[in-house]
Amino acid sequence: MKKLGALVMSIILGISMIGCSSKVKKDENIATVNGSGIIVGNYEKVLGLNKQSIESYYGNSIWDQEIEEGVKYKDKFKEMILDQMIYTEAIYEAAKKENLLPTEEEVNKSIEEFNTSIKDNDDYKKQLKELGIDDNFLKYQFERNLASDNYKEKFNKDNAVTNDEMKKYYDENKDDFYLDQVEASHILIKTTDDEGKELSDEKKAEAKKKAEEVLAKAKAGEDFSKLAKEYSQDPGSAANGGDLGFFEKGKMVKPFEEAAFSMKVGEISDLVESDYGYHIIKVTDKEDRQKTFDEVKDTIKKALQDEKYSAQVEKLKEEAKVEKNEEILEKVNI
Image (cartoon, rainbow, N blue to C red; front, side, top):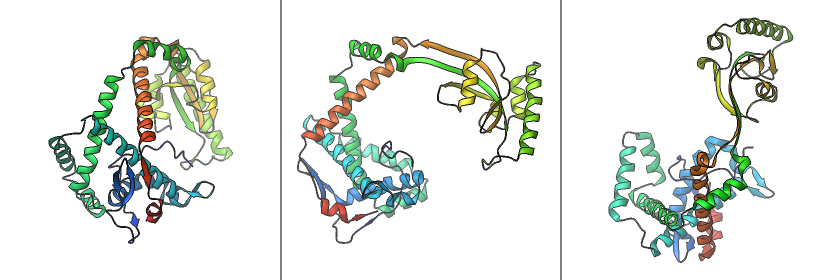
């Protein structure tokens, strides 16, 4: 199963109806943050707006899978969404204290832009309506989105990453900025069928013979790109003349990687066999060097800014007075 922790929850991702016990009132608080309530109605809508994206990624069976002993994914998912809303509310409260809330005009503009963006999508509008997404909910959501943007902008300005911090990070993580990559093209003659099943020995022998014929043409100096377009059975690169671009170690299957990284620029390999078939590889460029600080400082700056801000958000949540109504949370069904 794919890693669930890597998922990024965001609003307006996808639509799917979710159920909720009729015993739960929509205006009841499922949680409070510093006294400000997160009501069931808004929680249900955020839950629903994220639900289909999960199903499209993992399938409908995901909800009853155990991700740890005695814990089903649907229960973890409900907690994840509520925690995300708690984080959002904690940031919103901090923004309010610093007079960083958006104006009514800014919120209305965001709502108008959103409604304009979906005006021709009747199916999407119908789904939103079924889920109960109206201007009141959009106001609630965009107020918090814009407040979060304002808070983050001010925090980054007040806590700017210094050049010394960036250089320190660079010196301590130089290996992360070392370039060891190859640019190559290839021609693939497959030894598997369209379903990925291995061909018979007879068919494999035919594939090898064909690959040897193409290899001979390439070694004789025929245009590699044209040969790839004509013979390669790799749907991802054939149309581009077999071009795979630059890749680092660990990105290709082992036999292909070992061959490509051992070759010189301009060299054409002998046949390289992998689980996919027979490859003819041409190395077109190589890079093996340490990136300079100037090349990567913008990347480092963003990473350090994000790290500082994430720590601040964690601090806001830790310092906030958070109360969850576990009884109500249990009654909300996916």
